[in-house]
Figure 1: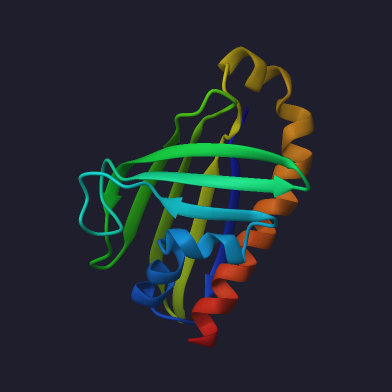
Figure 2: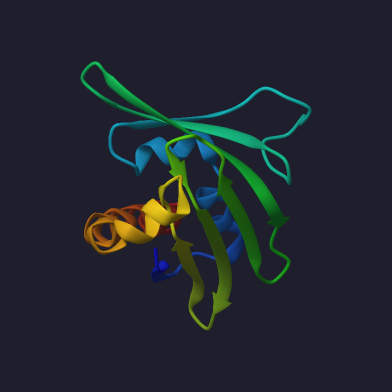
Length: 151
């Protein structure tokens, strides 16, 4: 699927926006019907390359597990960047979260190509997937920016 890119400016500083964006369990506040947990493992903290996450979306008795792993972790000095790769059987793709300074605060750029795990299938369903992905990620980014601004 072609990348879905959502960008939004924020009046909060880069460090505050980064804090909200990388609060993995907090992603449930922005993704409807979803909880995110950090998988137990070798990490003593909550971030860094190799960190494993499991997002679970529930609708009634149905649930979808979306495991992912952090493949790049560059916390902000001036800017910050984190990349995640989907590692489940059903969903595949990658997400890039970038936070950078602006004259009035910061900017969040969320880039994703998430879809069905087999890449052939992801390309096939891309036009339909984009129709649902764009409003979802706009909602998520808007919520994260709002939370960062509210302190």
